[in-house]
Image 1 (spheres, helix red, strand yellow):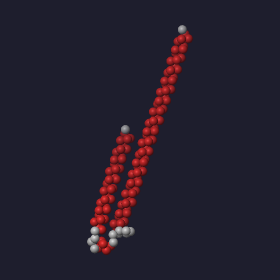
Image 2 (tube, one colour):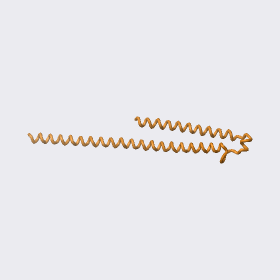
Image 3 (cartoon, helix red, strand yellow):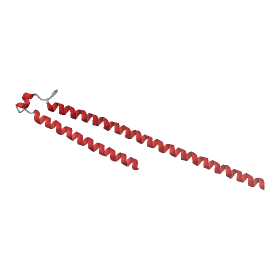
Length: 123
């Protein structure tokens, strides 16, 4: 009778130890999964920020190019056309308006990205 009780207690203890080990393994796997998800989200955010940085640099280069061309230095409209009242003034104005619209679109895109980042972090 005592041998039977000892055997049952031993089996129960082994089962409890195995359940605890399995729970620890599951917890470690969950932690690794969460860390992998966080890493993927951070990599995606870094890619988005790099894309936004490239877009900002392109917009700044375009703006500088437009301002240089509008000022008449390097490839701008001829002085004679401007003095004669040609269409180069209105063309420069259209280019400046287009650049301003592009900057507004860029700001809206950056705001949308920030909202998406905040939602991802909060979720």
